[in-house]
Amino acid sequence: MKLTARSVSRAALVTALVAATGSAVVLTATTASAASTLGASAAQSGRYFGTAVAGGRLGDSTYVGILNREFNMVTAENEMKIDATEPQQGRFTYTNADRIVNHARGQGMRVRGHTLAWHSQQPAWMQSMSGSALRQAMLNHVTQVATYYRGKIYAWDVVNEAFADGSTGARRDSNLQRTGNDWIEAAFRAARAADPGAKLCYNDYNTDDWTHAKTQAVYRMVQDFKQRGVPIDCVGLQSHFNSQSPVPSNYQTTLQNFANLGVDVQITELDIEGSGTAQAQNYERVVKACLAVTRCTGITVWGIRDSDSWRSYGTPLLFDNNGNKKAAYTSVLNALNAAPTTSTTTTTTTTSSTTTTTSTTTTTTSTTTTTSTTQGPAGCSASVSALDQWSSGFVATIKVTAGSAAVNGWSASLALPPGVTIVNSWNSERSGSTGTVTFGNVAYNGGLPAGGSTEFGFQANGTAGALSLTCTSR
Ligand code: G3I
Image (cartoon, rainbow, N blue to C red):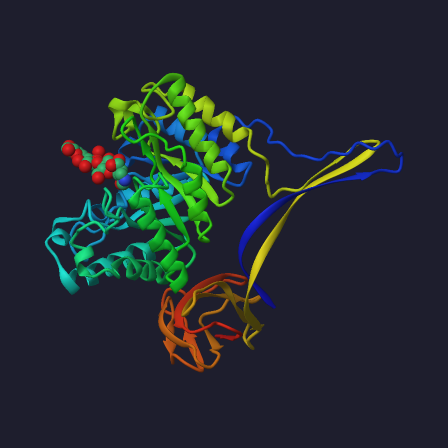
């Protein structure tokens, strides 16, 4: 069977079928019906609208009320940073981050992970490290945290703020940068191996103006990564604006140019200092710029009420200190509601004279990978559930599903094409790295109820081509 890798574009298709009575009414356009919350209105064009959440505020009922009502994506403001998740080397703490992740997922919101590798907010032990020990510690951090949250994160800010401000276009000097210029791509490869399902983003600020050296430098890095097959899926523009750093006139150009590299673009930490109409107009410009770029997939504001902001003095958010909607809120909602609808739902409306069908077609790319799924004698099947191929390698996720009876253990045999070598695998016991490779269950994923499933994965050099799988169970 052909394996669908990833949807890459959508096109709304509107058809009007004239019914037998013959009085034709032809509908030629769809417009978004007015949704009343930010998340719902963004969803009408297939986008999300998120906010940064501070775990300490989850006991504030006004805050939580707005959060649950308005947003469908959440970023932990501080709780997933390195100092929070690995305060002592090798000792990982997820309590505060989990509180946010669990709240979000419990409300049906998705989560952006922020951030795996950054020069700032490093714990003391990391600040004092250098060289290969630091490189190893950084990669271990990326692997451990991304593995812990595997399957729960929509997109990771894998690396944050790695470029210098000003006119040089250089990398920011930091202990991580001094481990070697390839530290960023090493972090991305580790993140991909740990959570193949998460989109991997590079995130930075002062990258909004297309003419700025820093923007150009990030662009060249992403272009280079795409050309060399370093796994990167998205660029995050933080977009912290004020009078010293206003919304640039070429903002949409910047979004579009990044998108043209073949990555998603996300506005990740939006706030705009100001008040009243001027602030509302600036927010509207940012939202409209995103809506005009197909691969601008969502917007996150960096907090809920002005009083929640890291720049509270600048009243930069969409709700005032009391949780009331500001003019900026209304301009954002109106802009989102004015976007053309690209919903994935299919609706059929029948009247006595016309039948009008509005549907969405999805264009997909297929890899050349084929999977042959074979039912094992004792009742399980295995198939490739995700595959990400870059120029020199790939990551595959294999799903093992029990048949009509529970199984107590399984093994999946995979025939690799010539030239493919497995370099890393997880959630299974593996024997071999070329030719026919066998993956057996580990202690925690051998038992599956009837119809139940589990996933394991591996990273390999080479081209996936045809992957043939056989599953046997106990
Ligand atoms: O929680 C402690 C509190 O116990 C203590 O009394 C107080 C004393 O200073 O500090 C509190 O921690 C502060 C924390 O925010 C929580 O409020 C830290 O000092 C403060 O440094 C930290 O600031 C965060 C900042 O990142 C650190 O770099 C901001 O909340 C957070 O909004 C900000 O977020 C960053 C993004 O991660 C990256 N892009 C820029 C953005 C804005 O700076």
